[in-house]
Image (tube, rainbow, N blue to C red; front, side, top):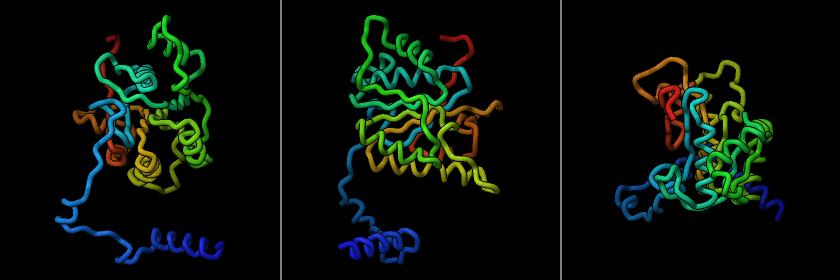
Length: 231
């Protein structure tokens, strides 16, 4: 059995690294039309569907507060921003720039002093980077707590370092791919919190700090904007 398992593993690796044409699936238009398609699942109806998302804004515009409100809404199955219904599920929030004190303050502002905290909204303030055990620990955490929504705040503190001589576009695509595949495999929503560039651009997609690989490497993007001082 061990020999059979080893051969099967080697064959799977060969198909991934050096597939023959027969290993690669192809479909006619008629075949595609006849294939059943699973409906899109929306943890937050008409806002965030299952997959990998990027939420970006300039610093100190309320990204973490918004993500706290989102996590609370999904964990309790209540309306998000008093506007959009949610599908209740367990939430994992990697608050990598936060502290217990700041997190408590945000959560109390979101839920009000008369509400109790949810056992389905879990926050972690320390987590290893992707290339230092972070992916393995993230998969373990998702499985242990049955997380349906994962928030990584901020993306820069979780992604690996850029390789020497690596192009920015390749770097962005390479680092996003494992998370996009994870979200698809687990049928969950992962939101990466990111920062905008200081320079302005008429196209909001070009305001995110990084290359165009950020927008093309995720399933959806949301750019948060408001004038300073506005509520």
